Image 1 (cartoon, rainbow over the protein chains, first blue to last red):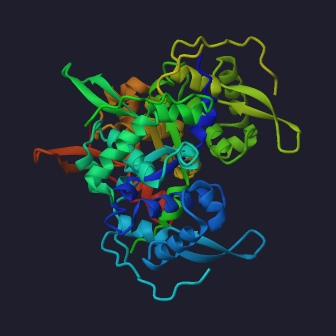
Image 2 (image 1 turned 90 degrees about the vertical axis):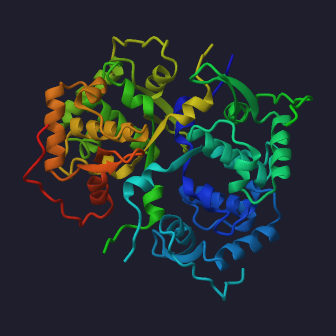
Image 3 (image 1 turned 180 degrees about the vertical axis):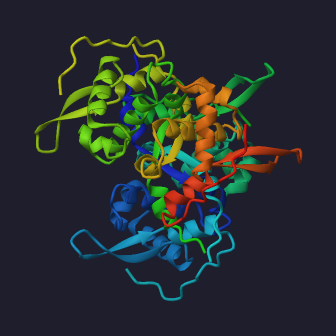
Amino acid sequence: MTNHPSYESMLQKQLILPQGLLTSYKRMGMNETELAIVLQLWRFQQEGVNFPTPAELIHFLTISEEECSMLLRALIQKGLIEILDEKGPDNIIQEKYSLEPLFARLFQPETKPKEKKDVPKE
Amino acid sequence: MTNHPSYESMLQKQLILPQGLLTSYKRMGMNETELAIVLQLWRFQQEGVNFPTPAELIHFLTISEEECSMLLRALIQKGLIEILDEKGPDNIIQEKYSLEPLFARLFQPETKPKEKKDVPKE
Amino acid sequence: MTNHPSYESMLQKQLILPQGLLTSYKRMGMNETELAIVLQLWRFQQEGVNFPTPAELIHFLTISEEECSMLLRALIQKGLIEILDEKGPDNIIQEKYSLEPLFARLFQPETKPKEKKDVPKE
Amino acid sequence: MTNHPSYESMLQKQLILPQGLLTSYKRMGMNETELAIVLQLWRFQQEGVNFPTPAELIHFLTISEEECSMLLRALIQKGLIEILDEKGPDNIIQEKYSLEPLFARLFQPETKPKEKKDVPKE
């Protein structure tokens, strides 16, 4: 009497992660809440939302908006994520959370993190 | 001067998750640490390790072995994971953490969780 | 001196397939060209294009438009894919290639294919 | 009355491909049968079988063993796959089909293929 959704929809809505993200986040100085924020940023990005607000993020997190903002800043300060300016389809400059520094440290373990002293205030 | 690993190895070591795990864990009563435990169980399972011990799990978590044991029990109590007996290759019965109840609730949202009163002591 | 694209872009542009598609297409009566068409339909679907034309498909196939149309009809006739009417965002009915019959046969091997006698002419 | 396998087993047995493999194989001079061979090599590799024989491959292909051997040689000659010697767990040298040249051309389009004149006879 199961009533599962179509196989098509189950198979379509999946997310791919480098396994190293799960085996290395601790070594890279992240805790489980920061891991969850990174996973949510990655998921939003797949759906075309490149700069979700803390208010949008905490819809899927058990933390407060203030804690979310603080942890986003912490991730930037640790050199794991960064905010980039990107030209959108209309040539309008838009901000984007990039996970590239984190992936670079996963795949090129010798990469030195660039500790940032000045982090943009939100 | 990048020195990345082979594309082959990058592409091989990936993990696939249902997106709903990230959008629904909060609604299902899990916090970020419980999410991380579930993701580690899932990753271990892909590698053929079906019943990692708390000691093995916390190698990749920022929590203590006691907290890990407690959260595993909490996940069982909430009806999200279960321990199954499985026949291994040598016909030996082995225990396994199954995420099937959690996946069933993701894919068949009407599924009622079976709250368990009696949880196996570790 | 490698010049690879960002890890982010490499990791984003991936496609997930049931392994069974590769191990069972032969048993289900498909050849390699039909497999490639199914994979292209699946890829288009991930990008939101639910009803690619043969002309669009052969941009990525080594066959002619006529052969592509013929093989799409053959896949429908074998009960592996079907054309569905779907309500789009504007309430407009749109056609869609669904791979659901094929996935059902992969995941429920006892499923009987519904051989179709009448196939829509293109 | 569906009788699908467990979600766990459905979600575990999946294969991840770079999308570019499907959009670029034609441009890289491959046909659909060669694509299918590459996909089978990739799938075998995920399962730890790094050097499947033509006899093993054609179990999942609609072509003959001779055609399979010929197409494997063609893929090597076009510089898309290569045979590597790898040290196995017991320090024994084992052969392996590597898809690295193909992935390099996907991800670094400027890469020149190294046309091989001398191809190992099977």
